[in-house]
Amino acid sequence: MERTYCCDVCNKILNNANSLKEHKRLHNGEHPYCCDVCNKTFSDRSSLKIHVCVHTGECSYPCHVCHKTFKRLECLKVHRGVHTGERPYCCDECNKTFSDRSSMKEHVHTGERSYSCDVCNKTFSNRSSMKVHQRVHTGVRPYSCDMCSKTFNDRSNLKKHLLVHTGGRSYPCDVCNKTFSDASNMKRHLLVHTGGRSYPCDVCHKTFRYTGSLNVHRRLHSGERPYCCDVCNKTFTDRSNMMKHLCVHTGGRSYPCDVCHKTFMDTCSLNIHQCILIGVRPYCCDVCNKTFTDRSNMMKHLRVHAGVRPYCCNVCNKTFSVRSSMKRHLLVHTGERPYCCDVCKKTFSNRSSMKRHLLVHTAGYSYPCDLCNKTFRQPYYLKLHQRVHTV
Image (cartoon, rainbow, N blue to C red; front, top):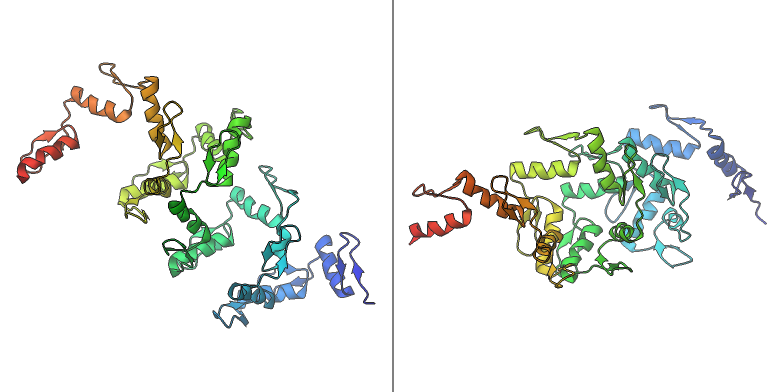
């Protein structure tokens, strides 16, 4: 019978005394092997050899299908599964298959989340996910694009980004054959065809596209507000609203525009602002080619083509494609007119009507005709007038 060796710390079984010796270094922190170039230390010789390839650029295991090279034979074997479709590791509980053992181990059904972030106490089922998360707090972005130097906090986001430069779009839509650079974008696109909102709230039956959105929504019913401001103890249902709120106390608007020096609370708002300034509209509707400065507005627009109207008036059951339209409509039932003219105190149900009214007091005729220089208060009336010249 073959002899086995057991670790007296974690009870892991190893095949030989050498492997046991190397394994124990994980517990005692011993790193006897040192890189001559950067002095980084390792618990075993094989890890040192793999690391040395970082300095030499040596990748000695090529894939014969796509010619991609790897530093380790194990990585090449896992990669080959991309071409063969082989997924030899299977979960005993749900029969989900995996291309490598580590991915299968991270896939758990116990619900146990034993790794906790020491900054915000968010919990994770595995150590690697926690380490990636902690970079949100430290600001560390160790993965850099060789082409544009943009940095990322995890490798998967870098890989997705590289497709922008290479043009790789390997995820096709089964309905219209449009291709996408990653699976998540393709799945979002499918909603254009299906109108699918597959995650329903079991209280009010409102449906959501993502489980994360559903979880946040459920807190409206449960009253749970797990995120608390350290300054004033105000609580929030989700982290993003709390982070925006913190700027009230800190005055923090740390993302300045290079052109006009206006500052923003987050990079997303800054990017949208810069697109408006330079006239760039990078998001395009697949159906009518209308362009948008940000993805969220494009996604709302896609509902027009899909016929999806997820927001319903609880008085007359009229439906709307966006929440803001439903809110404006509700004013018809409530009679509320929240916008007031500072000059004559006349009230209005929406801001645009109030702005048009203000021209009565200011005599603002800000839309001139290019042909006869006659001016108008609204673009609508200017367009009607311009027909006089075209007859």
